Length: 317
Image 1 (tube, rainbow, N blue to C red):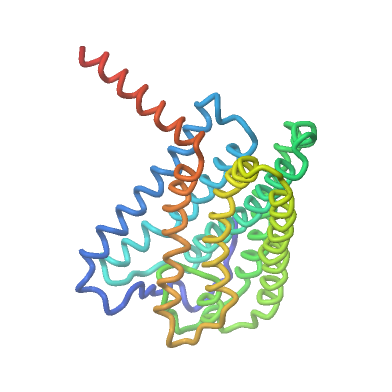
Image 2: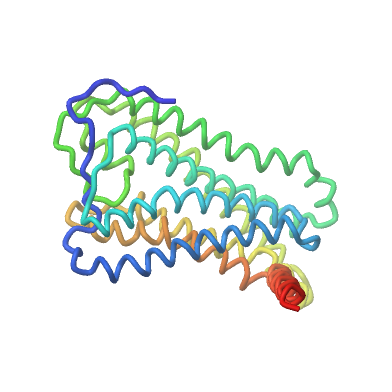
C-alpha cells in the first residue's frame, strides 16, 4: 500500500522495557494472560450480540464494533510487546514500524469516532425516547457504523503517506514498546513539519472535537435524567448509558494523559506505563465493564453458559 523512499536506516531498534530483563518471566505471564483474556472477552461480546435475540438494539451492535477495534488495537501491539519482553528488545523494519503505527492509529481513531456515535445513540434513546426508533433506523445505524471506520482509514492513509516521504539517517533507536508517531518523527533527518501540522489537525478533528461532542451529549443526558420524576426511572435511564460512560472515561483519560499532557524525556518509563493502560488495559477492561454494568449482557452470558453446559451433558450421556 505504501512505498518508502530509500533511506540510510532500514530498521529500528525497539528498546521495549529496558532494565527489566531480570523480571521478564514475571512480566511475560501477566501480560500474556491479560492479552489473551482481552481477546477472548471481546470475542465473547461479539458472539453474544450476534447470537442472542435479546441483544439486537443499536447499542449492542455498537458494542461489537468497539470490541473489534479493541481486538485490532491490542493484537497489533501486545504480541510484539511480549516478544520485546522475552528478548530484551528487538528490531523492526522502517516499513514494518510505519505499518504498525498505521494499524494503531486506525484502530484508535475508529474507537474515538465509535464512542462518539455511541454517545449520540444514548442521547437519542434518553432525550428523545418516543422518536428513537424512527430516527435510529437501519439506514442511519449502518451509516453510523460505517463512517467511523472509513474516516479512520482515510486519516491514517493520508498521515502514513506523508510519513513514507521521510528519510531516516540515524540514530535508529526507539525508546518505547511500539511504533508511535512521536518517536518515529524524532528519528527522521528530513523536514516533517507537514506531518506535524497534518497530525495536529487530525487530532483536533478526530479526537478533541469528538470528546467535546461526547461531553455535550452527556450534559444533555444528565439534564434529562435529573428531570425524570421517579427515582426508578432515573436509575433505569442512567443504567442504559453507564457502560458507555465508563468506557469513555477510561479511554479518554489515558489518551489525554499520553498525548495532551507534556511528558519530559526522562519520564518515558511513565509514558510506557500509561500507554499500557491504553493498549492493553482498556481492551481488557471494556468487556468486563459491559458485562458488569449491563443486566441484559449478563443474562445472555448466563444463558450461553447454560446452553454449553446442557450440550456437553448430552454429549457425555
